[in-house]
Length: 331
Image (cartoon, rainbow, N blue to C red; front, side):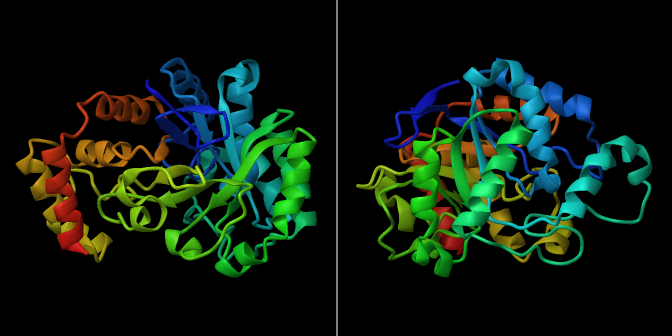
């Protein structure tokens, strides 16, 4: 596993990171606490050092599982988590007891909530200094650590980014040793397009993939780090699983309006002799500006598959050109 500098922070991270959005969920199909712990520890054994979670994921249980997995090897890992969503206390309590009834819960006719949702209603957000400090302390407890390496605002709207009263608060937490650096985890790179961000913002997490390559135009045109030296955390590399080769046209049409673009990208990947998921991961790894690409994983099967994709040869300049032409043509 190769490593890269995390911007100008002095932190070094593995090129691949584990995305923990579905870790700890009682309703996650095919998941168990034992399998999650085994996967997280095996990822560390494989040289993956970057683990990205949030106090929202599974109402905080993702942090709990990650903290348990890394408790004895904290010094080997770089932990990134997020705050800004306000999850009611009763929902966090419910999340704590769900693992005890996980087998029964899977039989219930309900679906797990996604990011930004805890139950059936959208979860409110609060990026005020007081809330962030409280949320940070709670994350530290769940993660069983005295510091968080990268603390991120979770999907802040542009108006909150511009207000930037969180900067002084998080600088204060850094001075206390509770965090090493802080950044923004965005839904789209356009949220910061044209903004003069505080130099204290050390990282930006954004979706970046063959299907949605636009983040490069905003954050790292030409593939090189920007003048501020901010780290870029790339996610959604596999387009939420839509790049799987076993998805036929009919299923893609049912699942996404981008189905024709995905089929075109698959055709271009085949033209260079690559499975689409392999090509997608190597596309995300290609820019020097990307410090780490996080991939969602729940068990050893996911980890092993991702490591195989990672071990493939980097894209040549001609392969990259074909894929990038495809990415531009499909938008």
